Length: 299
Image: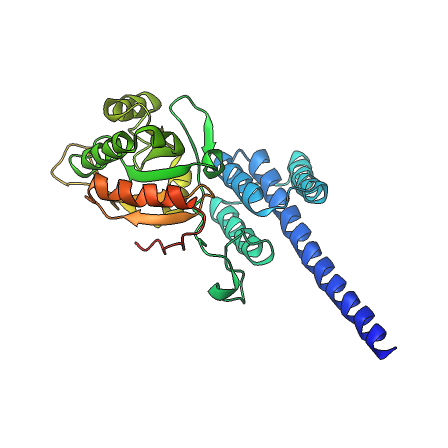
């Protein structure tokens, strides 16, 4: 009798924990929807785009979570239709950061370390870089679009005098050396100078090296977020003696390889020989790309 009572009590406790966790997740997703409604009503496209990434990466694909998100969106969108003023950009950014932290706590991405837990409690490959950008044809591209394939990602800009051309030549050589296996890899070049790198400029630049290299660009805000996800830094450098509007961009070099599951597998230092990169990539392909411990993407 005592064992039966303890079993029932244990079952009730587990159910209570599950329901509490689910309620916390639904609440966070509803608040994410509220932020989405505010961003849409106030014309903040960058915020709305980032909210979409958070929803795709964190929320379970269930009806309950979808309805919670839509309810939140409709609530604030309607409120602004009734005259509620738009928040200042700094306030909106703070709300986005707050809801992002909540989602990381209550609905962590698979492989991500939830708050209050240790790395040993989660699966390897914990770093999942996320991005929402667009290709030269204006099509939205996210980190989920290439799931099932490896991604070899580099950041730079088309006016870069030396580092970027060298990097793309290495990327081209990697594709060449992979041969038929190159179909399992998407090469990506993300510009850190969207102000000058238009769709046409980016298309012509990547095609000059290899048409299989996908050039991506976005607004300044989305580019910053993408770079931060990959632990890449960049900043404009202006020479006082140069003509007005003239500048270069100081940025992190090297390439990051994502596995078929979208998680970071390897960070290749700048000027790593293409053959050396190919040997590592082929080894991961042979292993399936899923069992390799993630490496921390340090700056």
